[in-house]
Length: 228
Picture 1 (tube, one colour):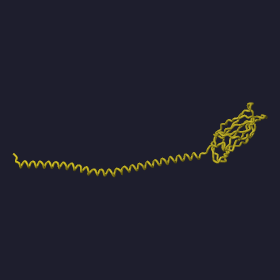
Picture 2: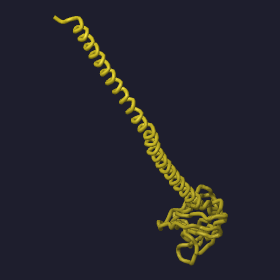
Picture 3: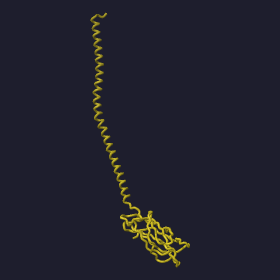
Picture 4: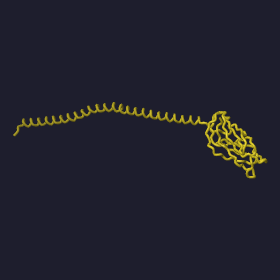
């Protein structure tokens, strides 16, 4: 049986053991917290300076590339549009009847067919493009209108500078009957691809009557071509 002194000693020893155990536990918990706290500033310190720098660098680089691409694309598009506009502005318009000085001359050389040449001089201040067949009607002394067909020759495409001329021929059947025949008085001319008309006097002879009513017979026109 233990004595009083012995029991006191055991209780004291157990108390110390409990205290030491609690101290050890508290020390481990504080140590773990301190370790986490010590590690946290280090991780936070790495993340904070690194993250803005890391984000800023790629972001800045991406913005620069995007800006360069947008600027380059815009400049290229603007240049192309400008070039197209310049090409469109520099392309000459068609030769308009209202800006042409029109005249006609008889160039017949004898035979069954006569030739009247109609000249179209560019009286505008700039160049113009002419291509195709003119529209031509003949007015007769009887008040009739004779429309002329095309002879089928290929039509060249020409540019007329200011003061330059183009021309086409009217081929007509010469009246050799000894009678009055059909006498044209005026030529109504429309420049190729235009709608405005101009009128000049007929310089040639009378036409032969082919159907008893002043028909146009073999009246034909050739395409317009640059002179000289």
